[in-house]
Image (cartoon, rainbow over all chains, first blue to last red):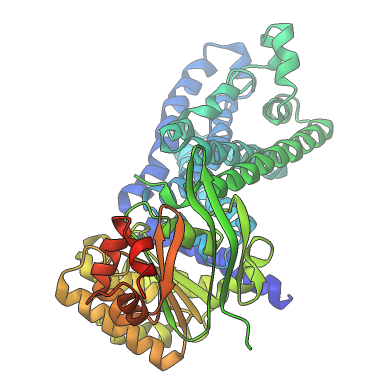
Length: 269
Length: 250
């Protein structure tokens, strides 16, 4: 590792440590990470058990709904992980200190992504593990494809998270509620709980423009047919790369705009 | 002659209709304490923000340690630091955690020793494991100062370093800054509207009014030039628009 890369890694670690200190020092924050995914899993676990005996579609693969909800949580929590780590800086009016330090914007973004990954693991792993004794559904039965689905959804969550940060940088804390709700616009067209073919044809075209459609269809292909769709995987990967690129560009543009307006100094509660 | 630590050429900043900084030029040589002095809205904080690269100028150039801040700010940021009462440290982190994070960001070697000696210097040892949000204003100012000194900066920029402090704490902070400057030979630029503070700490003053530098010199020179007894009287002359007439008096 070169000295420059070593310094960058140290600065990224510093920012990750800053958020880990925050989680360690505030149990409500840590509890919130686990609370919602677990609660959602419990509700969908009962729903799955009920539908397994009343729906032939669900009966084909008992865990389909519960796995879908857990994977959706990966994307949702991935996006929240990015956006909330940023909001924590705004709430504490710390942006000015951060950006007069040698921390570069890309290092800061990397630290947000690392924190998002950690938050997703803290949030979804207990829910996934609890589903095994409660409902006898283990998402780990998906095998290696699970890693691909997890990564692809996390990356899409990051892309949305970066775009939301950009919007908050541009519009101020008035836009912070978007961090909670923005990603749900993808929910109807992602085929989380139903196949994409259930959508009107014109909406199917839009759905296939997002990696989420490929992931959830891919998950059902594994569960229903025991087939791993490499074509879906590659399409989702390509789309993720495009959306991460767009998210990063919008964020850089907003960051530059903030340096023009002085927003980095003024933003806070 | 050596390159000044700060050199500002034709610096302006416009926010929509407001010209916050209007084509200013100044330079600060190494090893001194200088001040941007002016009333509210004079452009002090805006100028400091542009020196740090937090704010992009509408026109003009800022050189710090000879580097153009627009193009090479990351070359000089490790050598400088900043403190302002308007920017805070994360309240829910302890003092030690905050200092550790910033020590890592600045690449401080022997972090634990640095934090220990700074806390002893700034009388923070007993608060190290307390959350910043639970400290008094004076204690928070000392923590902010510890963060600003964590990398032993060669250039320290301070925005109203004693704002909202009681006279005793403010005096203590000024004394500490004097000692730090003497010990390290660092350059300090502070933005203030506290005349006593500027008179005590600074050897060079840039008087700002409505975004322009209307006068400059050492506190003694300015006091002599305006035929006044204190810098505060000079400030009032300038604020009330008497500077042109007064400065012209031989």
